Image (cartoon, rainbow, N blue to C red; front, top):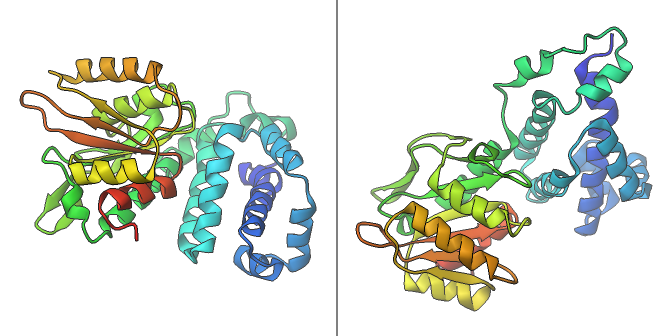
Length: 305
């Protein structure tokens, strides 16, 4: 009987590796170095690089891998290897494969080859439901990188920071990962009160969802303390800063943001929320990738040198 991991090993992992190899090649790594990082032979790397990328993506699509999340997954895997973080590469790769299984995305392919397997099989959903979530791993990595900044504590609003990651084409809070309990300043340190979980942030997630609904390439958001220096630095280095004037509650904020976004064209880097009576002013910074988000946060903190 064909096992779920047989499908993964034959129809998913080789093609994910091939896309990672191509990303490393575009980054200028030699075939020998790519072979070392992927733990495969150099002839295998040559074979990967000789495959047409649309063909690779089509094979993954046929297996059940969503095409709209592939680019980000491959970028994160390749970045981990380029940075020499092999443990993160293994963790992210494993978390993503397990997420494909837990979401039932490979079930159709499994049913096609495993004759006699019941149509209502829920083995993967039950076994992998508690496994690492790729979005959770991304949120945790972004938190670690922000926490390592020299001026990280100065970025924390009084109401707390949050980091939110959304799935491609997210439409609900449960399509996002955020930190439950938010992130606070404790002395000179930055601490997360609760873990990063699906639906962990309600308010920041709603702000990000408004943006995602109109700007599909944005998937990452962090809310930081408002300061003129931060806003000026982002405006000097990036395009697209919206300012939301005084409001009384979340509903008014989201309604005004929705209106401003309907009229907005171009890149969006940040939304400045000037708060209102009893509401702290904060800045929402957005990114198309973790690296894009971190770069903007570093700029805000005055550390992008």
